[in-house]
Amino acid sequence: MRRSSVAFAAVSVFTLASGIAAQQTTVLRAARMIDGTGAAEITNAAILVTDDRIVAAGPAASVAVPTGARVLDLGDVTLLPGFIDAHTHIIGRTLGDPLNDLAVVKDYASYGAIVGVANARATLMAGFTSIRVVGTRNFDDMALRQAITDGRVPGPRMENAGNLIGITGGHCDENGFRPGLIRYGPEDGVADGVDQVRAAVRYQVKSGADVIKMCATGGVLSEGDAVGATQYTYEEMKALVDEATKLGRKVAAHAHGTEGIKLAVRAGVSSIEHGSFLDEEGARMMSQRGTFLVPTLMAGETVEKFAKNGVLKGLRAEKALAAAAAMRKGVKLAVANHVPIALGTDAGVIPHGTNAREFGLMVEWGGLTPMASLNAGTLNAAKLLSWDARVGSLAPGKLADIVAVPGDPLTDIHVTERVGFVMKGGVIYKGAGAESR
Ligand SMILES: [Zn+2]
Figure 1 (cartoon, helix red, strand yellow):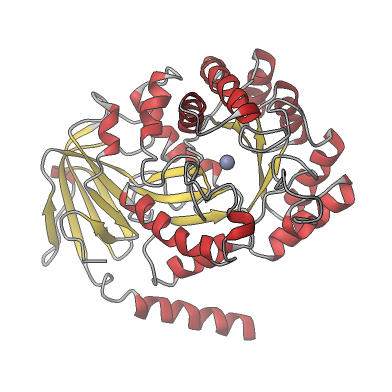
Figure 2 (spheres, rainbow, N blue to C red):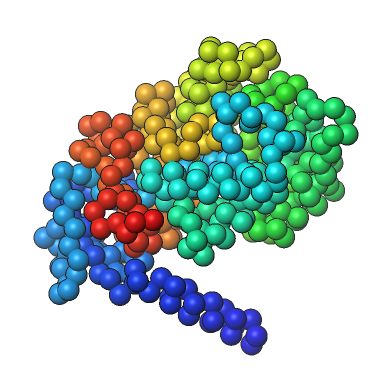
């Protein structure tokens, strides 16, 4: 009884808090609309939004305008579902920031979350109304999510992993420091052996994790590990996935190396992140099991650039060049084998707010059609997040997360980088009708 009265109170408060946006019925009109399901583009489109939900969407002639509705004619634009980035690190400094490498020992613990406020705003204004946050420290992702949900700061909906989980000295640890300076345990995400791995998962879930992030192999930006090398054993991965599944959470596996990808897929992860050295057999396994690939091509492009211009040096530069070259082949193999693909950028490695360039790279590197690329960043990503009942397409009953891009993204996919209108949950954050925020 107590629980249900608390829940009722929470709902009432939310309704009051969003009362200004509620009460309002809005009709959006535009030259074109792509609904996110892969269905053909609609010309002369309209979407009816009441409160935080889509009521109707389709050809303008089929959408009745209720009396008193606000009508916003957005002109020569294409309406799309709010974009979704399935691989971000929204907290803290970005790669290329000269203080990034030492942030873990020099920044105040709360500094990363404050930077995260600006990162979240830039992400939302770029049209990304939902993101998955695959790994941070100190649960700053949970604090930021709470501040966004409470309406204190603008930002996307967040599905959070809490601390990333990996082996001692691996990609998910902090390396290259004097021994003893940074000593993480399972609660912080550094866990060895099946018992510690299970404990690490339990603590992330207790602390608010919606999804579990695991480092199956080495990485590009970590010190002292080979990018392709497998880090967790199959037994550890299996225990991690088993524990997460028991607690109702999916697992996202950071995996570059060919063998590590296969071990993670066999262990039952829901997505392979990066997947650089994916081979034919691995692609077939993913396709059969429905394991998503989150290609993070922008991260590949960025680390390649930083290896060439000297921002990354030594082993990290070598790893960056090898991974970026492999990624171009890996993503094509995935597409050829019909592996489900969700858009992810590794934002944090790339500047926050530039995420939409991934749509173009998936077309140029991966050979996706513009429509398939748009699907990867809308409904497909929503499916990976298990949020497809709420977001990801322009369908009646879904949350009114809607963006507009100039012209037609099927002719020029790069117009996704020039989002001029952003609505999240029926509230306009950018473009016609936006309140200042
Ligand atoms: Zn990442």
